[in-house]
Image (cartoon, rainbow, N blue to C red):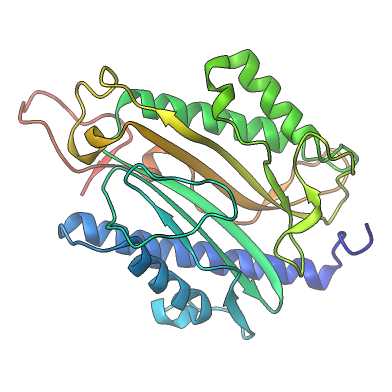
Length: 289
């Protein structure tokens, strides 16, 4: 337990790692993504991940002003799209071409030996059922964060997630993962702090966790895609993942999410294939490139 609780110096280092991780997502990955859409440019998952990986090692490549110190990737960034998804931490990036449908990016930066991690899902021309499932994922995330309090069991996150989905939308229960993240430290993944239902260890102030909330291989039926535009019409399954670096606070104070990139629908959804009918407006919250 003593090593899991971080001192002030370690916490400051985690925060700096988190800031750099967020900035690389914003200034490296998102820019590559939007350039690919805007210019109809073909680029592979591996090419994107390689660029992001280089930025993790050298943040100055994308003009990020960062503290002096040693930077490296916690792992080779994971980029997924096109219907083949794995939301486990052990997932890997393949060499297939980026598809403009549902795109998941996971990356982590180690700064002076302390790791931060985050993942986001981006949606291109999403249909209504995808938006609704993402809104449920955001609710689930809020429920999980609410129990990440000093003195509560680490396993309460998984218990809360399963209870919420069972009560709110039981048809999604089979798409939930068994683990909802893990403790972060000098080791990227602290094996004694896996957030599953069996873990009876307690959250304590100044612990650091990677909270990972997702649905794996959600079904996308022909009926749900009836009015779809773009590549999402080709999908029969898709996944979604949100992961963040979270610091446990004292008492009943809510945890501090230190990887700040927005998870709101308007900031992760793109509408790039308009219908011909001029009277049909793009859904609210989706911007056109």
